[in-house]
Structure formats: C-alpha cells, structure tokens
Length: 65
Image (cartoon, rainbow, N blue to C red; front, side, top):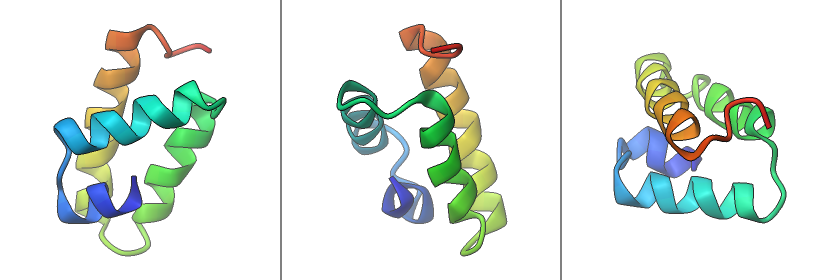
C-alpha cells in the first residue's frame, strides 16, 4: 500500500492491496497507519492516499470495523 501511495496508483492497485489487507485481518486503523507512515516520504501523496482510503472504507462498510 505504501508503494501505491507513493506512486499514486490509487485506483485498482490500491483497492486490491487494501481489500486484501482487510480480508487478511488488518483493521481499518492499521491500514490508516500504513498510509500515515507514507507521509514520511511525501505528505501530499499521503494526504491523497488517505482521502482515497477513507472513501474506500466507507464504500466497503469498513469505516468502524
């Protein structure tokens, strides 16, 4: 997911990696932590990644899980 955020491949690739992580047992907060970590390498890219992540979590109903 970090590579997706840094390369801004936030469509199919980011969706696939995020849903697989959630399916494997990662919590939404753990996934958010991965995106926040990406800010060390590019704050604006991480900001965009978090925006896409929040929309994806809302869409999949994983927001409060």
